[in-house]
Image (cartoon, rainbow, N blue to C red; front, top):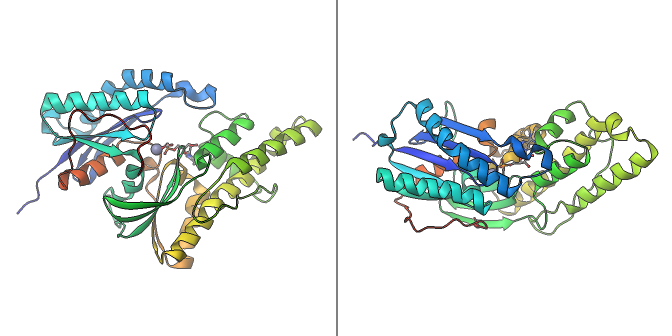
Length: 340
Ligand code: KG4
Ligand code: ZN
């Protein structure tokens, strides 16, 4: 019997990207993202501005995703949306929009945990791809989270490690701000690092017990290094920008790699799935690839377009929830601190 074609419209609006995607089963037909340039000069996301930008972006982004996918809205099987974690005002825009689509088209509503979606981005079907096998070690590295998770099944997972303070992406962004880089600084630090000496400045990796992380120490060490060196040479940042970026990136990337090694050993797991914006980092990708052949691990890192916030990852979780009959009611409310 031919499997029924399921069309999911995914909506992401948890932070500063308004995104809509259409999936046919586990394949992405379109994935449109409107970035909010407005936050660039503030050194971080301004929640009030983010909600307003989502309001003006959401309809055009959804219309574009439908036209890119070349389907009429009446063919949609369900709508899946990010219900948290994230900024309340931003989440409200996506959830209210999704409820009205669900009501108007009389299709099921599916809520999705944003961090769940980052992990499952590796399940999006594409040519020659290999699906992760359960159980796996999930590693979420993003602007708001740094998590290690044992994933036994689509809906059965256990958080084993978390950050005690900042998230890794936040450390990239805040240290970038110290260097005068625009928000989000992670991609620029990655680019500048390619010409830098990663051993020029020694930056600490926090010694935190078990599988937890901490980034406040490296942030302070980085700030002190820049402030003290600037006192001696006012051109310090300009003359050392690539080495500063490469040294910072080394410390941040190694902090994650060390914990992955520890957890893989402790739980005897060789399937490792990475998700979140920082998984776009080129050094992270390179080291993980090298480690996977050295340790005989299967490491899954999503294609770059599914690393930072996007609605395709919401759509793929929506698809799995759809086939497992996990639907929501119209009275569901956003969960800014939604746990995995
Ligand atoms: O997953 P994401 O888009 O949003 C959250 O859920 O938080 O992650 C955004 C984070 C930002 O901190 C950004 O600087 C970082 O991902 N990021 C990177 C790179 N691309 C994005 N960090 C390092 N290297 C990159 N290439
Ligand atoms: Zn995210």
